[in-house]
Image 1 (cartoon, one colour):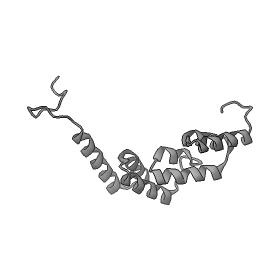
Image 2 (cartoon, rainbow, N blue to C red):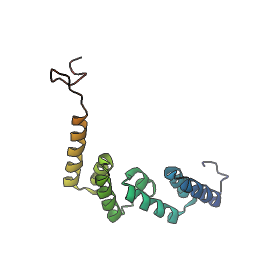
Image 3 (cartoon, helix red, strand yellow):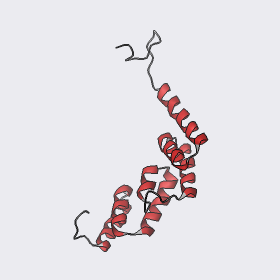
Image 4 (cartoon, rainbow, N blue to C red):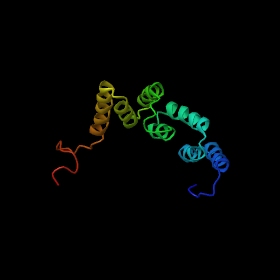
Length: 128
């Protein structure tokens, strides 16, 4: 992929192959190399539906590229799917403090619920 000898058409072909194999992050890398913005737009829609912020970011032309409406849809999907870390990062990117607090609270609840309690009431591993 990083070889200067790979052509844009070859990179696009590899992107198509990786997309067909559902290796979307690899496909995004090849599409970016090829400058295949339509392919990246298709992957961005998949990222929105999956609530996958990392893949979404990989499909943007630049970090300043907002796609605010798509990002709002993504964070809603991330919440629906319980992808609270993606939702949290998305809300932070949007500057949505209320959403950010909601996602943070959900993450804290999940992390708090995952601590195993011993019969004495102390979480395992505490006090060691």
